[in-house]
Amino acid sequence: MAQKTKALLQLSKVSRSYDNRMALHPISLSLAAGECVALLGHNGSGKSTLLRVAAGRERPTAGTVRFDGLPMDENDPRIRARVAVVGDTVAHYPDLTVREHLLLVAVAHGVADSQEWVAQVLADRLLTERADVLPSALSSGQLQALLLACALVRPRDLLLLDEPEQRLDPEARRQLAELLRGELADGVAVLLVTHHTDLAREVADRVVVLEDGRVLAEGPADQVLTRVGLR
Ligand SMILES: Nc1ncnc2c1ncn2[C@@H]1O[C@H](COP(=O)(O)OP(=O)(O)OP(=O)(O)O)[C@@H](O)[C@H]1O
Image (tube, rainbow, N blue to C red; front, top):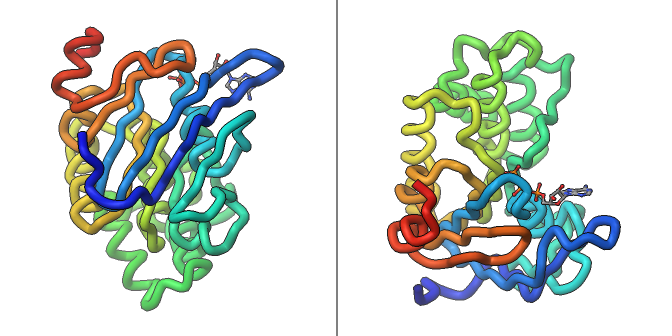
């Protein structure tokens, strides 16, 4: 598929190995503003590795990752201000409430009227009733909603999501698809790791299917997923 505009995220011949074992063979990928690419593939195929490298959380063994022309580095404040990540590990402060988590992130990113905005994000993510409890009192789906809310309470041009659908019930998953379509309409670029082929079909402009760290197939979801037998 033709690129919509200039690439916001550009991975060029990126590979990653652990202990001399290639988890990711050289791959190139670009993502423009308002575009969504979904990464699919079996367990261990390299999706999360690719996302972590794309996020600047791990350095590629070879190749380069650039965000809006800058070398990708999660410590660069120019990048941190514009890139929101929901990774594959659950990270939270055990002694901060749900609301306090969101306030912390909003204030750190200079969000105006943060109290009101946090209340809105809590409502959107169906967390209002749990706003004043600690993470230990959340269900697993509510904890997932909190992690997503932390990414949505702050400004972003690029959203990197690792299986955001996990532990969500069907209604929350439907809302996730709606939410991602809204992000794309606002011009946010989305790189989405998912096992949920329906979610990929609903939101992705392109899918990339990985197998053993290599691209097995790439293209529009409808064509690619059927071809590789992913339902
Ligand atoms: N930190 C690490 N050290 C060593 N090997 C790793 C590390 N992270 C990932 N791997 C290996 O790299 C390969 C790809 O893992 P990755 O987590 O990227 O797969 P995945 O497609 O995201 O899988 P899943 O669907 O199970 O989340 C696997 O063989 C995994 O064991």
